[in-house]
Length: 347
Image (cartoon, rainbow, N blue to C red; front, side, top):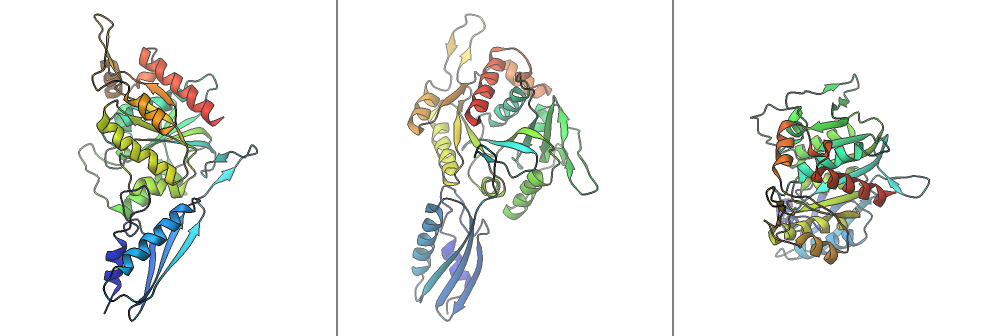
């Protein structure tokens, strides 16, 4: 006789479109009903893209039908719209009270400097002529680095009587990170469901107040946390961080595809570690290759909004808790140009 485990094993072969995780591990399979060898499955989705339910339905049907001896198969989809609000101009706004815009900073690959870019984008936005209120949520639960970059490793957030987390503030930015809840040497060992709860707590259980921009520093890859964010809040745009080399560009494509699947527009690509400018002769050396970000932006039909050099002051600024965008270097000016492009893109 066919049992629930047979059905779940079949559905574990069905990935959520654009993601590397299957619909079972994401918790989308809500019920399985068996009548001898006939099966009925309920799958719950939150999406506005009609292609996603269709793909999941077809793949689930095909996978279950491959079970020897299976009878009739019925796949029921319960589709919910992701939360979204619309302002008077018809532009989608975030579903977090008081937060006007949510920007995701992502990469398909680790080690490309995504957190450094996210931290400096937040600082650059706050330093524009409009005196914007900015928050930064470190969604990389397994490798939280924002506390170090803002010099707040020993800070611990307080909570209100309603159990809302009060963000840490540094350099005019409101911050939340798993790093504030752990000792320096404590690893984060959480599986999918718990990672989902932490992420939702950081987003919706944090007292962000009135913000013009909330920057989300996402973990690398396309997994639980990314899907949780896509289904929990309305993200206004995403910035993809890569380096010029092909190895990083391949994974950047995956991140771009993921956001397309969940209807998040790509603001642009940032090429980090774009070149090294020798201080002795002023020559630029493309250590990790040349033109990769520009070619990839053209291929994807999105703008290249910044090229960040690799330099010691950026590393020193991050280690000392004073992001390089606080200064007036060439890199700081580039981050300020990126901030202006992000503002223009969403206006």
